[in-house]
Image (cartoon, rainbow, N blue to C red):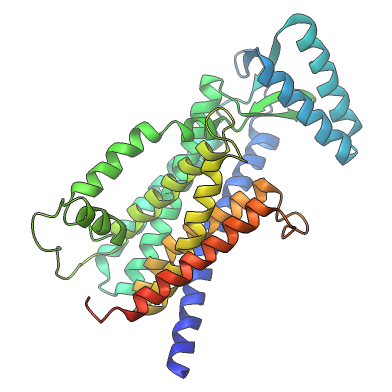
Length: 351
């Protein structure tokens, strides 16, 4: 019993470490964005701010939403600016937005993040310690993802792509275009996942399961010692976050599925069912490095449910209210997770 408690404790610590890295990535991106917006992207001279014209009902709906947010926050200036823009849109049928420029600061942050990731992966070649290689891989993947997101921010600004509106220096500015680019990056993600599916040296449990079910295994599972975990961990860190980001963005897109759609409920159910089972599997890992690697999947799957709950408004107050659909999905997810854990615990070692 004591040994089992220690395993659970170590698993929780590993999970918290990975959660901390993902949250650190969010805070770092937020810090870069705010610093860039307030200090390095304030040049209003011609040619430095692209002007984007937006037409359609979506722009009107977004302006109404932003005006409502400003009103609830007590921001009278923001409410006035959004209100005037809404009147102009209804009168002329179009809206002119400004886009922040691509500043040298943002370029340096992007290149610096990717360069640091490369240095960490190179540094991993000089240590044979499994846990240290795993930690270097996690931070390498973390910095790679920061660089990728910054790169998408630059592309969105340069192309004039916006997902929401904000007021910068008294002007309505298009922002968050990187999420639109990320959502449509599925065309690049699919070949990557297909390669992993057919590459038999990949030992991911999910891909192994799919290969067995689809009869894609041409021989026994690849075995043998892995000499350097860091590049594998960094790639897994990035690809795992990328995959679930795309899934969530499509789930929340009202043009495709929508926040309250069946797809979002199914995704919530699958992540909830899998997260409990994955945590149980995490406690079975014997090495510290193995626990850290497995924690990446547990964190991303579990955090997807957190994102969905926030979109549903369940985390902003008393979210466990009597909503039959939500409670049905929640109960079914917990039940399936318990069944998976029971089934795995009954399986003989090596089976």
